[in-house]
Length: 257
Image (tube, rainbow, N blue to C red; front, top):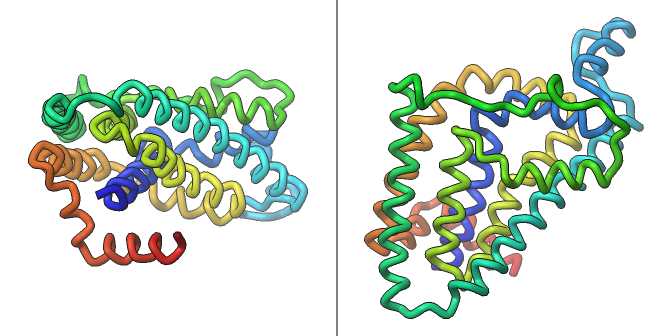
C-alpha cells in the first residue's frame, strides 16, 4: 500500500508539471530564474544567425543550478507539510481514520468533477499564470530561486489546485506516510523541472509541441481523480499496483531500496 501511494504521489507531481497553467510558461520562468528572459536568449541566437533556442554553456549551468535551488525550495515546503500532517494526525484512532478516508475520497471526487466541468462551464475555466513578463526584474541569486520555489508550493491556480489538493488530501488520509508521500510528489514535480533546466534548448522545443494537446488535460485528469477518489473511499487504492507499468516501477523501487 505504501509503495502504491508513493507511486500515485509521484505521478501527481508529474501531472502538476504538465498542467495547462504551468507547462506553457516553464521555459520563460526557468530562464527568468537564471537572471535573463526567454526573449533575450532568442534575441541573442537570432543575432548569431540561429533559428532555435541556443544557450551558452555558462548560461546553461546557471539555469540548471537555479532550477536545482527552485526545486529544493518547494521540496522543503512539502517536506514540512508532511511532518506537520504526521505529527497532528498519525495518532488518531482507526475509527476516525476510516471517516477521514471517506471524507478525503469525497473531496478528491469533487476535485475531479471540477476539472471535468471546467471544460464545459466557462466560469470555472479561468487561469492565473505567473509569467516572467509580470515578475519584477532584479538580480537573481540561488537564494531568490529557493524563495521562488517555496512560494511556488502554495501556487493554487485553478488547474493545479485540484491536483495539489488531492495530494494533500491523500497525505492527510495516510498521515503516517505523509512525509514520504509528499517527498514523492516533490520528486515527480521536480525531476521534469531539473530535466528542463539541464536540457533547456531541447526541452523548450518539446514543450512548444506539447502545448497544443493541453486542451485534453483537464477532462483526462479529472476522470483520473474521480476514479482515484472512488478507490480511496472503497480502500482499494492498492489496485493501482496491479497494473503492469505500475508493477514494474514498484519493483524497480524495491531493487533500488
